[in-house]
Length: 179
Image (cartoon, rainbow, N blue to C red; front, side, top):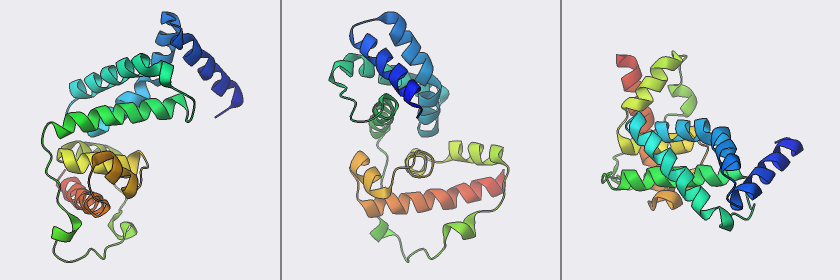
């Protein structure tokens, strides 16, 4: 990130820490679209995604005095929004299946599964995945978390994260073929 942008964001965060509503609005406008896209990839509906973003910003502004710049504000906010989504999805009782419970191991490589597909089909297919699959697929492939991080975030084993990701990929490929 450009040094001037980093300074501007830090300055906004500091003004927000002192209750400046205009700065809160500016910070919100800077990050709302990115946070909405993250939440939308994880949740069942636009409305749920909007709720998670709203709750994420509410928590971020509430706990802003504890923000110590150990990461960027955007990374900190992203973690809050993702945790909000995860907690909401946990209330829906997502069933996790351990990697050990799946017969056989998967020899397919990612490259073997990728064909050129219409991006609209991929986006629609992701939205049609079951919550658990969509959640891990989004965290891993789209948000860039590794399976160890996902297992820590979700409170599941690394092998479960890997198996759910693999199942999500297989399901997505089937969905795309049917669209």
